[in-house]
Image (cartoon, rainbow, N blue to C red; front, top):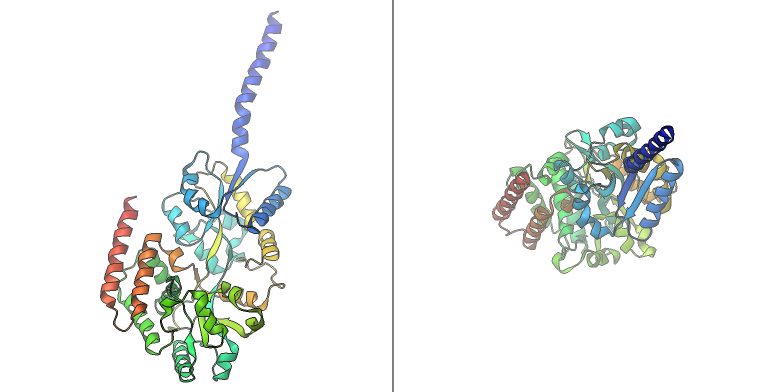
Length: 423
């Protein structure tokens, strides 16, 4: 009887131990992936990527959740401090990623970059974009470029070639004005389009690293280098380069002038072609923003999306494995083939891409530093102040009180930086 009791006791003890241990093991081995890919097409691609990962890793335990894109942006801070938090999350490069790095909420992925050889297979500009203090925290996987678009027929009819330098751009404005052509279309009813001009002028005059540091609130808006940016901007207005009364137009309305051959050029993202009639699309081309100081590194705006790992990921090893797949040649090839997404890797086959897509890829991969866009590279509050300042300046560039504008921006920068430091 004693032996029977002992045997039952042992079995009971084993059962208790198993019931206690199994849930812990399940929690430790689960990979939680939180995604904002809620739009049609993007959701299907995201789900297919997950299935590809599961097929390649049949022993993995992957939990996949998709949240509405806008709701995700509001909830992500809660996700990152939840218990358990997601292991891997979709997000944006630039300041929006650096925000979580600075607050210790993003995991260091430098070992993953080393393990997967990404320092060699990712374009250098994207490695820089993923880095904070020389460590990598982000896996950039898709992007689009900004460039100077132009109507080939309009430039050719006026004996012009696409401007490569600052002098070329000013001379083109003079020639086109004499011919009754608007040199550069721009619609600033929503002033974010003006921010592109600030971005590129600053990068070309002061270098992309200075621009990045200004966006990170580490440089002053009253610095003489920033004043030089507005001086160059004023020079463009002095040469009548821009569509008059641009604040009356949305960016698509301003594009109509170019579609009618009444304007020659437009600084815009690659999505501009979506608003160009099919019958004239072949007459559109683009070049990088003109060089101002040839000694400066080349920077470009290329809004970029990708993934990161929560610093308190319950399963960091599994997170690294999932990120390795999402950043792999296979995954980026899938996204390129199914959605036409531009890859950040240099080893993805893009032979089926259009010439324009391949040209855009080369434009970005040849850059020394890839940045995002003004309202992605700096904080939301600073971005709002900056956009308002740009709108004030271009409303009357000749008479705008630049000193007052920059002093106001600097006061905002100092206050926002102090508030961030106190968080």
